[in-house]
Length: 131
Image (cartoon, rainbow, N blue to C red; front, side, top):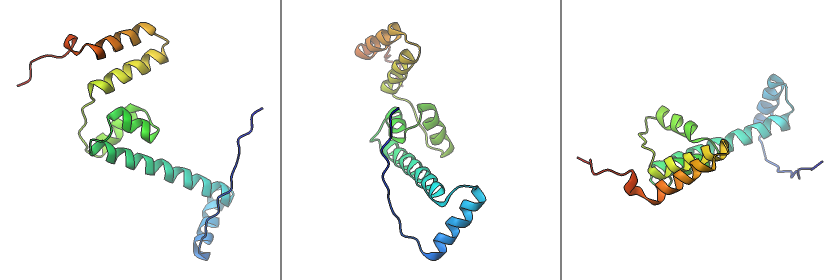
């Protein structure tokens, strides 16, 4: 059986903040420390998502890169962008990354091979139909 190392992080609360935490913990039927941990983890997830959206909007991350940074799937990232009214067009790299993910998921080495060949030979799929 493997054990996960646990560390203790302390925070300082005002008496009112402590009262609020204890009241919420009673309502949630969780200990104050369990609820505080949940709040921290939810806050971190929110922070990573906000940062990922910002990186995508600034062009510093691809769609799949932003999803990876936010620790969510590409489809969930697309939903998040859609809800925020942020236009997105998956890049060819995003498409090929998703093909590779599907190849891993379905244990399909032939799909990975095709994705690699298409990525390496854009002349097979790019067109000159640009207006």
